[in-house]
Length: 354
Image (cartoon, rainbow, N blue to C red; front, side, top):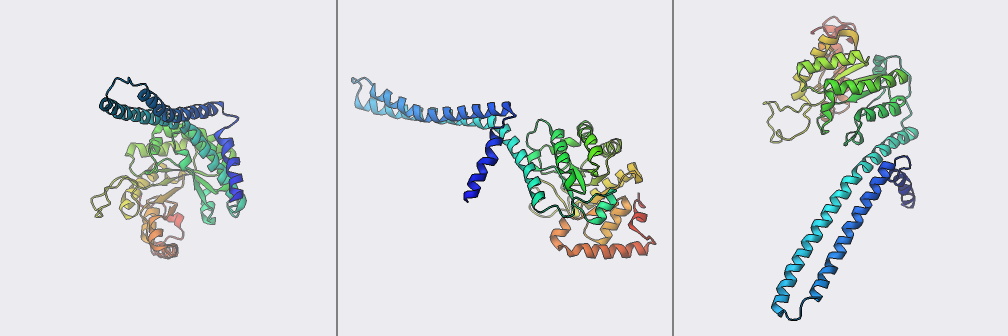
């Protein structure tokens, strides 16, 4: 506990009072002034109330003094509460950007620290391409982290910083601009917004060579899916992940929780995710690997996604329900399906139905 107390000030003070950011330091000073004003109001109002009661004319009756004192007390309390709340809200608004900057910096430092402690094992392997990265089992990092999805003034810059810091730690990186559970994030899928993002990442991609993919939503219109495909080719990405969970609610849902907001994954997502993948393959073909995600729970599901255009698949919801043993079962079922249809490898089956 003593070490923790010594460590926390060393971590927080440089970030809450950053020497290189005079704008943030001004915000800290202003926030502290608002805090002081709120405290002064809480102290000053009762004092002035007491003084007002003491100065009441002695000619006033006791009943009038009692009524006046009650009214004055209610008024004083209301003024104190309103002023304190107003100054408190101003303090929070001013300090918000300081907190956001500190959270982002601490989160990036945490990644570096974890890497130095225990994550070095196989993440640093140098790979010659995305397919070998996946075959070796190296991990990708989806770096739409919570600290990057606050009210940032420069979201493309946040992604660029993340890629530069994390590129050496992973086999491939996924630019996730489509999580349905992060407010405002899906706005980055628009042609102009995504182009601005990829333009910032392209020189870093050329420098670090770590494969770079983009992950899209299943709820995009057909023209928007085509736009993503065109931008992925234009900025020479290494692949597209299709798709994230959906915000749609199919009529087949029966649970009383079906009206809840957020992303829906698993079986209800399967058909739409496959349709998006098939459209992407029709636009891109073999020029770029596609990774199929959403509702894959069997070898048959994986095979259908491969025939629709996926070079690889990912599992999420089904792993929750069936555990790690699901992987071996899917591999066995997939091998049998490939053999049945005369394919010697997964690569031969990619896109056969598109």
